[in-house]
Length: 134
Image (tube, rainbow, N blue to C red; front, side, top):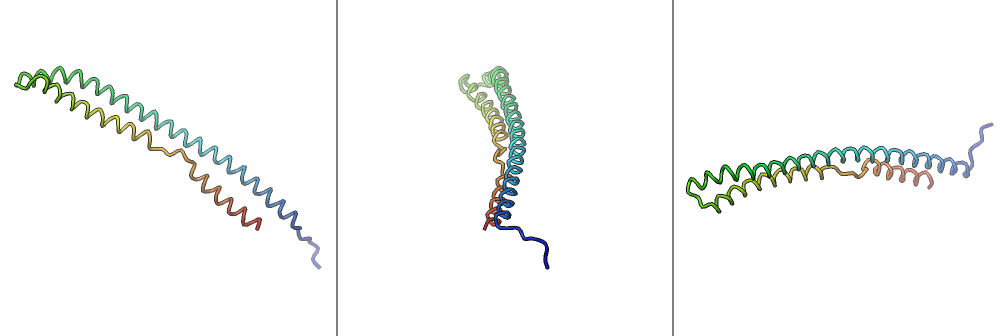
Protein backbone atom coordinates (compact mmCIF):
# COMPACT_ATOMS: atom_id res chain seq x y z
CA UNK A 1 0.00 0.00 0.00
CA UNK A 2 1.16 3.45 -0.84
CA UNK A 3 0.27 5.94 1.91
CA UNK A 4 1.50 8.98 0.05
CA UNK A 5 -1.18 10.87 -1.79
CA UNK A 6 -0.45 12.18 -5.22
CA UNK A 7 -1.13 15.89 -5.65
CA UNK A 8 -4.15 16.80 -7.70
CA UNK A 9 -4.20 18.76 -10.93
CA UNK A 10 -5.29 21.95 -9.18
CA UNK A 11 -2.40 21.66 -6.73
CA UNK A 12 0.08 21.06 -9.55
CA UNK A 13 -1.21 24.01 -11.59
CA UNK A 14 -1.24 26.28 -8.53
CA UNK A 15 2.31 25.23 -7.70
CA UNK A 16 3.45 25.81 -11.29
CA UNK A 17 1.82 29.26 -11.37
CA UNK A 18 3.38 30.17 -8.02
CA UNK A 19 6.81 29.12 -9.21
CA UNK A 20 6.31 31.00 -12.47
CA UNK A 21 5.36 34.15 -10.53
CA UNK A 22 8.46 33.79 -8.34
CA UNK A 23 10.58 33.31 -11.44
CA UNK A 24 9.10 36.39 -13.11
CA UNK A 25 9.77 38.49 -10.00
CA UNK A 26 13.37 37.27 -9.94
CA UNK A 27 13.78 38.09 -13.62
CA UNK A 28 12.39 41.58 -13.05
CA UNK A 29 14.94 42.13 -10.28
CA UNK A 30 17.70 40.88 -12.58
CA UNK A 31 16.48 43.20 -15.35
CA UNK A 32 16.67 46.16 -12.98
CA UNK A 33 20.25 45.27 -12.05
CA UNK A 34 21.28 44.79 -15.68
CA UNK A 35 19.64 48.04 -16.78
CA UNK A 36 21.46 49.81 -13.93
CA UNK A 37 24.76 48.34 -15.10
CA UNK A 38 24.08 49.40 -18.68
CA UNK A 39 23.09 52.90 -17.53
CA UNK A 40 26.36 53.24 -15.61
CA UNK A 41 28.37 52.10 -18.63
CA UNK A 42 26.42 54.46 -20.89
CA UNK A 43 26.97 57.37 -18.51
CA UNK A 44 30.73 56.69 -18.40
CA UNK A 45 30.86 56.37 -22.18
CA UNK A 46 28.95 59.62 -22.72
CA UNK A 47 31.17 61.55 -20.30
CA UNK A 48 34.29 60.11 -21.90
CA UNK A 49 33.05 60.93 -25.40
CA UNK A 50 32.06 64.46 -24.44
CA UNK A 51 35.46 65.09 -22.84
CA UNK A 52 37.17 63.87 -26.02
CA UNK A 53 34.94 66.13 -28.11
CA UNK A 54 35.70 69.09 -25.84
CA UNK A 55 39.43 68.42 -26.09
CA UNK A 56 39.07 68.20 -29.86
CA UNK A 57 37.27 71.53 -29.92
CA UNK A 58 39.97 73.18 -27.83
CA UNK A 59 42.63 71.85 -30.19
CA UNK A 60 40.70 73.13 -33.19
CA UNK A 61 40.41 76.61 -31.70
CA UNK A 62 44.04 76.65 -30.59
CA UNK A 63 45.21 75.33 -33.93
CA UNK A 64 43.24 77.89 -35.88
CA UNK A 65 44.57 80.78 -33.82
CA UNK A 66 48.22 79.71 -33.59
CA UNK A 67 48.64 78.09 -36.96
CA UNK A 68 46.87 80.86 -38.81
CA UNK A 69 49.18 83.38 -37.20
CA UNK A 70 52.46 81.51 -37.63
CA UNK A 71 52.08 79.41 -40.75
CA UNK A 72 50.09 81.92 -42.75
CA UNK A 73 52.81 84.48 -42.11
CA UNK A 74 55.47 81.96 -43.18
CA UNK A 75 53.55 80.99 -46.32
CA UNK A 76 53.03 84.61 -47.28
CA UNK A 77 56.72 85.24 -46.72
CA UNK A 78 57.49 82.25 -48.98
CA UNK A 79 55.47 83.82 -51.77
CA UNK A 80 52.06 82.15 -51.36
CA UNK A 81 49.07 84.40 -51.83
CA UNK A 82 47.55 85.42 -48.47
CA UNK A 83 44.12 83.95 -49.25
CA UNK A 84 45.60 80.62 -50.32
CA UNK A 85 47.83 80.48 -47.23
CA UNK A 86 44.80 80.98 -44.97
CA UNK A 87 42.83 78.24 -46.79
CA UNK A 88 45.68 75.75 -46.50
CA UNK A 89 46.11 76.30 -42.77
CA UNK A 90 42.38 76.38 -41.97
CA UNK A 91 41.79 73.15 -43.93
CA UNK A 92 44.47 71.27 -42.00
CA UNK A 93 43.13 72.49 -38.66
CA UNK A 94 39.57 71.55 -39.54
CA UNK A 95 40.61 68.05 -40.63
CA UNK A 96 42.38 67.38 -37.32
CA UNK A 97 39.39 68.62 -35.35
CA UNK A 98 36.94 66.53 -37.34
CA UNK A 99 38.97 63.39 -36.63
CA UNK A 100 38.87 64.00 -32.86
CA UNK A 101 35.15 64.86 -32.88
CA UNK A 102 34.31 61.68 -34.79
CA UNK A 103 36.35 59.62 -32.30
CA UNK A 104 34.33 61.16 -29.46
CA UNK A 105 31.05 60.46 -31.23
CA UNK A 106 32.08 56.83 -31.77
CA UNK A 107 32.87 56.47 -28.06
CA UNK A 108 29.43 57.75 -27.10
CA UNK A 109 27.65 55.31 -29.41
CA UNK A 110 29.67 52.24 -28.35
CA UNK A 111 27.30 51.04 -25.58
CA UNK A 112 24.02 49.24 -26.32
CA UNK A 113 21.67 49.76 -23.35
CA UNK A 114 19.40 46.82 -24.24
CA UNK A 115 19.32 44.24 -21.37
CA UNK A 116 20.10 41.30 -23.68
CA UNK A 117 20.89 38.76 -20.95
CA UNK A 118 17.57 39.43 -19.25
CA UNK A 119 15.64 39.22 -22.51
CA UNK A 120 17.25 35.86 -23.30
CA UNK A 121 16.54 34.60 -19.80
CA UNK A 122 12.90 35.76 -19.96
CA UNK A 123 12.42 33.99 -23.28
CA UNK A 124 13.83 30.80 -21.77
CA UNK A 125 11.61 31.16 -18.71
CA UNK A 126 8.54 31.68 -20.89
CA UNK A 127 9.31 28.48 -22.81
CA UNK A 128 9.78 26.58 -19.55
CA UNK A 129 6.54 27.92 -18.07
CA UNK A 130 4.67 27.02 -21.25
CA UNK A 131 6.09 23.48 -21.13
CA UNK A 132 5.09 23.11 -17.46
CA UNK A 133 1.51 24.18 -18.15
CA UNK A 134 1.03 21.85 -21.12
